[in-house]
Length: 134
Image (cartoon, rainbow, N blue to C red; front, side, top):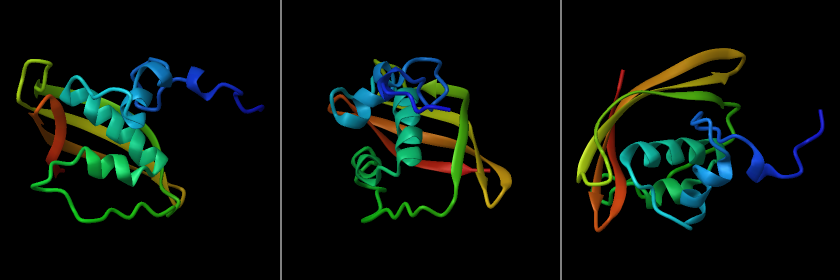
């Protein structure tokens, strides 16, 4: 199968159903900030796929952000994202939670990560605080 000559026309890996260029790409490039906690969650999922540690650290709240983030190519492949529930996190909110399941495959075995993530908005920008993985 031929590679798409226009990657911006491809669907966003966050499973929003939108084109990457109109969904998470503007956040990842810094052209615009995520308007909601869920949008930030989606863009961070894409950053994990792209192994974009700089974006992940930039969108992690300074009070909980690690000093470094190593995203080695360990064979893990993200397969899909499903947002199950969100509370707050809207354009007029200052905090919110997003519950999601991210599917992946590593070493030929499928897995899933289920997390309830907490977000805060400061000075108009959303930040990931932390998450409870189950």
